[in-house]
Length: 323
Length: 255
Image 1 (tube, each protein chain N blue to C red):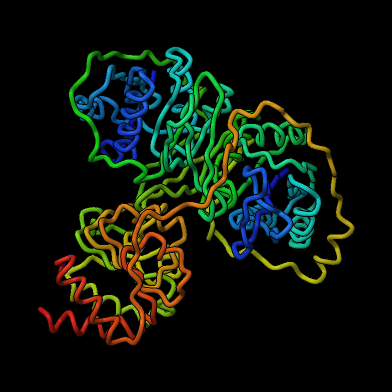
Image 2 (image 1 turned 45 degrees about the vertical axis):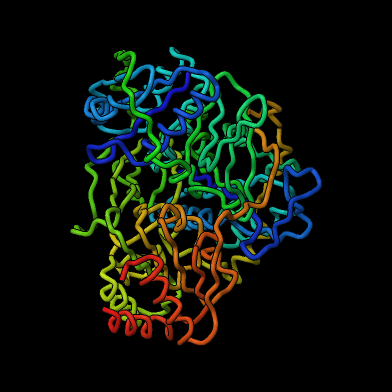
C-alpha cells in the first residue's frame, strides 16, 4: 500500500499535499500497489470531503479530540499507530514546515527511514530511487532506502497538482486513534500573523521580486515603480524582510509564500535554495543580476546580466511608453 | 541547566564541491570546512539563555566528524563562550539521518541534557531531521524552526515560524530538543580572552560507536542538469531594456 497523508492549511488541503497525491498516484501505478489517503487531526473531516474526488483505493479518517489542533506529540503518535496497523510500503507527504516538525519523530519511533525534501522519483531499477538536493543545491543525490516502510516528503513543485487524477474512491474507513492527554507534552497557543495584509501573492499573475542586490531601502521605490508600471505584485526574498525593508507577507520562499505566476521577474536576487523553492513553479522566470554566476540564472528563462540600478528605471520608463 | 548545542562542520559556501571516485561522496581534500550557519545561531541562543539564567548552567558543544574537519569549528565555539566540548570522532561520512541521530544519542544520553539546541538543517545534507530524531530517541519534547525562546515557570516557550508569515508560541517541558532558524539573534565573535581561554576548556573525545544499520544510502551523487534553455540578455542598457520590452510585450504578452 501507498499512503498519502493530507495536511490542513487554513481549512484547505495544503498545496504540497496535493502534489504528494500526484506522487502517490504515480508510485501506486508504477509499483502496482493500492493507494490510500489519510486525513488526520486538524480539520480532517473537511479534508476528507475535499479529497473525495481523488482517484484512490481508500480514504481514511483519523480523528481524536487530542489532535483537533496540531502537535508534534499527537500527530507523530497517531501516524505511527496508522503505519503499524496498515504497514504501507511508502508514506508520502509534502515537505512542509509541519512535516519537518513531526515526521522525524515517526521515523525514530518506528525505526524506519525518512527521505526528506525529494525532488524526483526514478523507476529505472528494481525499487524506486529518490533524488534530493545536497550541498546547497550544488549537487543532487539519488537515495535508496531499505525497509518495510519508508517515509517520503516532496519538495514543493516536484510534482504539479494539475496532474491529480480524479475518479473517486473504492472505500472509506475510520481509523480509531488511541491517545491519552499525557501523550501531549507541549502546549500550543493560537497561530498568528505579525502584520495583517490584504495581499495574496499566490494568485498574482505577475510578480516583481526584489532581493539583497537593491543595496538600500532608499532604492526600493525603483522596483515599486516597475511593479506598478507592469501591474505586478511586489515580492521579495528573505534578506529584504529580515532588514525590515518590506513586511513579511511580501516574502517568497520556504519561510514565506510559494507562488507560480505567469511571470516572475526577479531583481537583485541571487537565488538561494530557500528562495527558489518558493518561485520555481513560475511559468516564466526573468532574472536581473549583475553576477553572471548567480544560481537564479540556472532556473531562469531569461538571464539579464547587468546593473539593476540602470536597467530598472529605464525598463519602467519604456513600459510606461508602451502602454 | 545543561544545554547541548549540536554543531556541524560543513563545506563553506565558496568551496568547490567535486564528486569523488566512489560517486557517493565529495572530494573533501579541496574543501574548507566551516560551521553550519544555523548552528551558529543555536550556539548564540544557548549562550544567551545561560547568561539570562545566570546560575551554574553550562553550554556544551557536541560535534561529530573527522578531527581535521571539525577542530576549528569546535575551538571557535569554545572561544565564543561554550563551557566544554564533546567530540565524536567519525571518519566515515554517514548520510542516513536516523543513524546519525542514533550515534549522537548513544554518546550523549548519559549527560542527561535538559536542553538540546541545533540548527534547523545542515547546509550539506539538508535533511533537517537530526534534532527532532534525537529528541524522540531520548524521550524529549521537540519543536522546530524556533525564532525566539523564553524561560517561563520551569518550561521553555518557543516562538515557531510557520509558513506564509504565520507564527505560533509553543511551551515545552524539559528535557527539550529545539531546532533554531537562522537570523534569530546576532551571533557574537570570539573575544581575545575567549580565544586564549578556549585552549584550557575540556573536550571529551569519543570514538563513534557506529550503528551499521543505515536505512537509507546515497547511491549516486550527480550535478543537477538544468532542462531550461536560458536566453542571456547582456550588453549596454538600451539594448538590454529593448530586448526585455520585446519579450514582455510580444513573447509573454504581459504589457
